[in-house]
Length: 410
Ligand SMILES: Cc1ncc(COP(=O)(O)O)c(C=O)c1O
Image 1: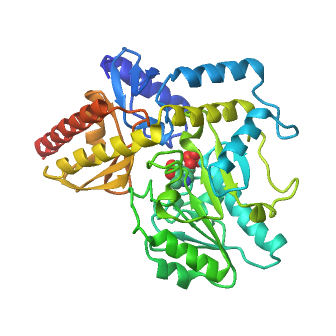
Image 2: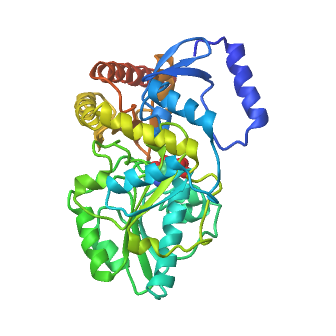
């Protein structure tokens, strides 16, 4: 944000001329990154607590990831699913060893992983169980993606408005209310689909026993439990999958975002039994499981282990939460929600969140928002305690600056 006004306006003008108008982008041009830092075209440094929206798990320019990607690019990047490739095989083997799952389907994003989960749940019921079950019980305030299937599962009117009619068969119940799920299931229900912690909805952490209760209900009613770990997965909450902390075994889990550290990837993991709902030709993806993305993901798994990043997430996450708690003494700050390095500061309408984000950028910090009232912090999993201290200090002064501007403008 050290550009001249002319340069900034020029960027915004260029963007307006060529992009569809579905984003509100800050006029900052990041040109490189190093660890937890991003640098703009004026070489100004920013602490990246937006983390590419929970994607930059290893931060930027991690030497091991960069060299693995370069090496793989020099070998082969794409072969299609007409053939086997070693990185995809290795990644699937490792993901199954690390989880409840026996089978993996690769794609390129979170929404695609959820599309696969929805399609598999329906087809499994139809072709394996021979039952006419197609309905899926989801949560109000949930978020599963922007493509029409995942959007149909998304229980938030603001994302769905004006795209109707969406897919039939989706039912939305209040989050963290197991009885509501039980009541919503009928003879045509194939699955319950939930985030273990609601991300886009505002970092809503359910009661400790919520997912366990859902598991018991799904078992009793013979429906599948699908957990969307697109945001919570890959170590973000302190365990590789968030479900591990809730002591449940799902039937299907979706992951994406941080899995390949910035290279687009998505994955749907499931049990062998459920996987039989797919047969050759029933589902697919041209890029899914390509050697480049899968090699990057294998490297992310290596680094998470080698650098003991799950432990780092637990420690720095606790520290971040503690510091954010300290901010609740400020006027307009209402609370803290989250787990690990998925943390949100809840603010009242007294604090203009867009203004806080601008003030943070001016001070060299990127952050995001979630839900109606939350500022969301998603630092890379490699963040250090010193960087957490620093980020929260910048956030604090950004909130003060935003408040004084808000008051000043009245
Ligand atoms: C829980 C959850 N599911 C799905 C998605 C969609 O992922 P993508 O944007 O990669 O399609 C997101 C994205 O924020 C998410 O948080």
